Image 1: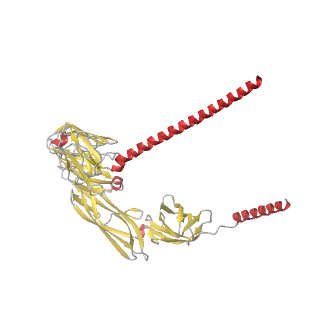
Image 2 (image 1 turned 90 degrees about the vertical axis):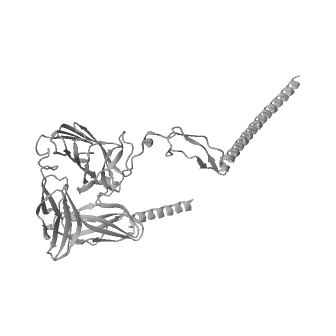
Length: 517
């Protein structure tokens, strides 16, 4: 007994020592190294710089990875400012996108990895210099020009670096909606070498629907939003849409009321051979932004309602084969297609929709429903901003419209195809012969088409189709018979026990009676 108690005390003492060691001896670190590098070491303020933090581990581990930087540095990616619970096996690199709003030399930028339950491991700091955009010189031509509709001109911009070091900078060219700019990328991050220059060039084209007046093209460098500007004065003849003969800007006042998915337009009058130019404020689910109505005859008290509709109108028999952005219905009063010379429509498509549907911005067209078919209208790309791409199209009249991908207008279906609706009924399937079953299907409407005709043959397996059911039935019957036999045997045994008990009771009673006599 005493020896047992001594042994138990020793075991308890060893457990206390082991517990103490587990909680007091530090865990060996598995993160062996953290390093930090930057895509560039000198950039203008407002320019994004990518800093990479590389974490090396001797074993598989989980760690939070951060970039430590001065308060003047902002981190735009990742949005959480760090990467939580990163699985580190061997070597892992995580990028951080940073910029600075204040020029200066930032020398205390470093990466840090914090393994679960361990102390953080930091890298050696790096230095990034952010220059004011004025360290670079921007020049361009022309600073101003006058152009008519559909005319183009060349816009040239030169960025010069007089400094002793290479400088990386972000630039962006912003063109107004009525002027399209093509050529070099309209936004990019470039590096201008020391004592050298970078030349950029675009072709700027005035829209055929542009209104008269001054338009500004602006060039941003770093966070300097107007490093260079060009003023384009658009000259429009008085008898053209948007000219002095238009309703907008003179004459009776046009009223436009917008709400989600709807624009109501009231035009008091349009004189013969004149054009009403109606601008529509950007509103949710209203894709049309401007409609120019040129008439042959004088019209008065015109009312137009532009409505986005959720799907294919009931009176329209088919869709286009491509992707569809919006269905649009235009209802009108006191004006007919006979009165109309031309209608110019300017519309917008959301960039998110283009991206989500993998549609190229240059592959968009406006369609008009007429004579039982969709007609693709001539559609031109005009310009774009941060969220939308703008287009213009010419239509001979009003109707249903849709905005979708180009080349999607199918041929109009024949009258018989439109009128006749297939109605198929089929007999039951035949027996499975040579692994095949058949049936007969007939169209009660006798359309003469087989678009919705059901299949009249199918593959089958003889073993599963026929013998499988027989075997199952046999097994079921056998089970029932076995259960019945068991029940009968049970009842027989119970009756035998009861009978034996009764006989035994009778014998006992008789013996007792004999003894009594």
